[in-house]
Image (cartoon, rainbow, N blue to C red; front, side, top):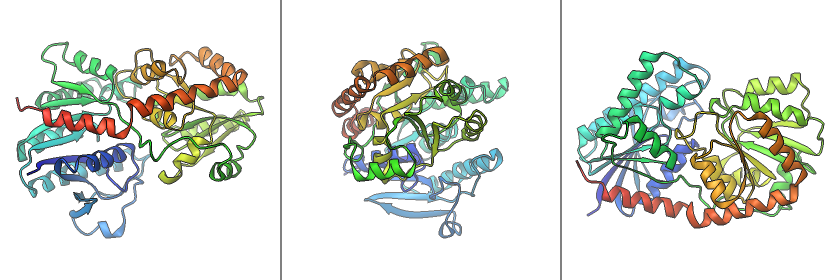
Length: 415
């Protein structure tokens, strides 16, 4: 008989949040080994909730043989902190109510989303339903918030740190997504009584995202739609948010506004997009363009439309999170322009397989020199991307990572 595994996913299929996609694929990959129940929000990543999910607190559904318990949350605006907090608290409390209604569990799996609450709900799930707790930390908080100075209230930060350390202590195993993140965990506990931990890279489905020829009709139509044809495209794809120092990087890009054969494309959305757009307009950067998020099914075409991809973290993010966009770039065989701390997981991968060039965050002169180098050596740079795809096929496939999760969960012992 299969062991029972409860996954607190926050977001899950069909929501397109990156953690939702990872947990959907993880649950799908583990369902032959475990009897899985997922507790998540009703589809609402965009902030909008469909009418059919507004009448009840809990909805019991099924996805590919996985039991999915969806909990109601209020709609929210991404730029409105109060509405975001209400939404997250509704997920937290309604998930707790849903937990009481399911069977006893052998394993509880939770992630660090929402920040802090993800860990706490795992702890409470363990206490309510028994079983061994696996805490998967995708991003360390409050360290991430502290790194960019988003919150400066010391007592609040200390409280939040104490709560998340407690979640780590109660967990039977902590799984992080980078080698540098294992160091952060050790530092949290001053190398004393460090929770049992391991690291497993995130992944991308290499059978869904792969290299395409430049003359593919969908790539040509994407380039025509956004005026990228006959240009050398340096692309940033993903969340245009706080943790990437893009407000300063756009100023470096301003140095290349006279390079009319090069275009800098930003695909996505986020909290700092409007600031960057303002800078582009006021400084007449005609070779910078903004493109909306692409549907998951079309991601393969937008990623393949670039010649080089940015993979960026702001200073201080080393050991706190790993930019998952790296896997998509490697999957399509494109070279990386990495603005990444030495010793960070993403930079270690880029250097191990030589799939791009890297520079330290905050070294704006260095970033400028790397862009110049890329523009002057376009053909040579393109060849680096092929090495990324080869490395990914051998080390970072979905099956490799999911099998590691399977082993780590089964090996977890109750302390």
